[in-house]
Length: 355
Image 1 (tube, rainbow, N blue to C red):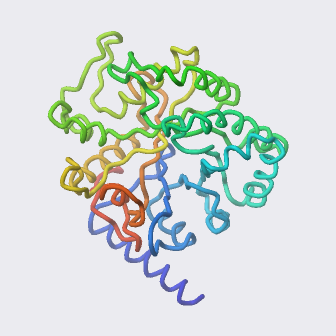
Image 2 (cartoon, rainbow, N blue to C red):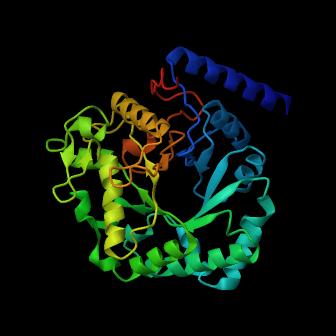
């Protein structure tokens, strides 16, 4: 126990020293969160992660399961937590009794000490190609919400499901935003549920992937939030100086075309890899530092998108750690702001962010 305490104290001291020397500093931003993935070897224990989040002044995080150790460690931490129901659980949760049991087992024992504010039912289900699984999404969400209501918890945590940007058939210009035709059956059901419960539409939006697929046509400055001439939507005349805001507004337009223009859109994932394979154009430390640094500056200003300038855009950065056990190309293992030992993966360079 003493070794754990001393190691935690040492890590906090080293991190604080690094932040001071490098100029890296987060102001506390209410609309900013970070994704805490765990597909890595020798990641810090959950209790140490709480210390890291406090050091970075981050007060919101999302995990991809309901790990009991994390839920217990985050008790009384003042960190808001979004938990995730794994995709493979959805068929079971179409049974209201099973949904009630899930909430009884995975949520109720940890509150109110652990501040669970949201439940993500699956992740990127609408673009996975599993039509059976897609049909389970909304029934599972309805049952989970009903179970929360049974305990009076629906007032404190919202139920939604993160989608990839691939749910859109069209995304440019933003006013042309529309959902893929094959989702015309399920998407109105989802939007009706979100509108009825006051839950947001969560979107995983990565300008990096758009740039990587077409670097000759997409200006790097536009995706990195650097000064650029931007683009003007020819129909709304709204000016966009970065791709992320354009992607979010495309989702809002798509929802409006289905009759649900009042639902809040939140970015459940966005980020930039600091390393990649030879064919992964743009995956560099420099670009990752610029993208995340400029995004965080925007968050500090509580900016909204051009379509909703007075509604601050809530964003969860992906990710807290580099996860060395993730499959796929090199970039998949290098989205983290931190290495597995809690040291900075690169200098985001936020000196002067706060007054």
